[in-house]
Length: 118
Length: 107
Image (cartoon, rainbow over the protein chains, first blue to last red):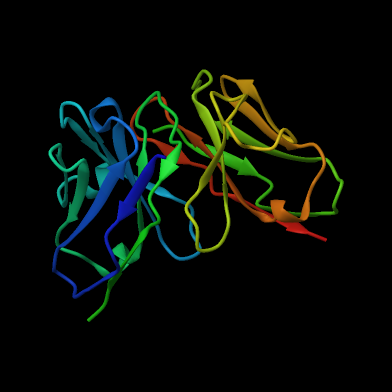
């Protein structure tokens, strides 16, 4: 069955970086995009960006464009999302999901809590 | 950017009630509209995609309609397990965006 398994919770200081992984299984990794969203406490999901599982092409949200990098490792069917220069308002649960533009988001990772605090 | 506006922001209904949640896009998004259900501590769960297509495994009491800018999620007969927050999502182009959510409480 399709699964997306994310890495564990992280606690970071302001200004640090975090890298969250999303390991896919149960489907052909290169056939689908992986999207990333985050959800701050009590808020709705906020789109961060998207990476093609086939080409590695990316598209990022404007508000994190200069701080985020998404990559894939096709040898391990794993997607990564790195966020730099962390701020307190980056504190959120980060999710990966299978899907991108024009395609449904039908499977999600379990979420990774990233806490930014001094 | 296209804005997604959901209403109501919260509602309370009884078991067996018919419940309707609406989502309006600020521009035409054709049928690139999905509905998600989210319960505390869990990721969103896809209910409806392409505005009206029921995702596999989702109970048939859930249905979606609409096209262009106005969309509706309907629960035909509310069940206790339907207590959750519901989000619409437009996924036709960047930036992908979600509605602000509708919190559904069971009376």
